[in-house]
Image (cartoon, rainbow, N blue to C red; front, side, top):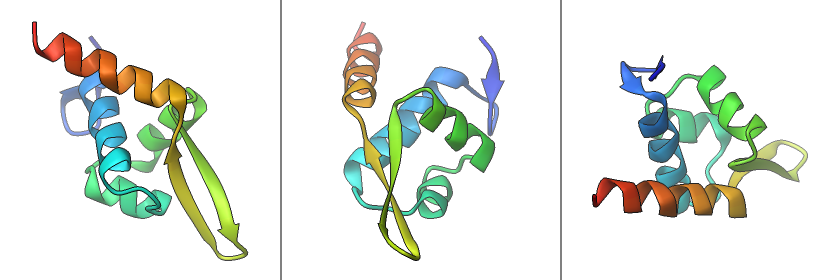
Length: 83
């Protein structure tokens, strides 16, 4: 499995970012990257995959939202961890 970020497998990185977005809705993209310890290029790939979306709530504020696809991924990932 390809590594991404801090030496963790890609699925773990995605799950960590999605879990943080679920726990703290409305974070800015840079805060979410900081809280989940991932670099912006990894965050951008997660957005491009459709797991998260970035909304512009005002002229100078953007927030990250978990998509339905992201919720399904997180649920499936959690079920796999229980095996």
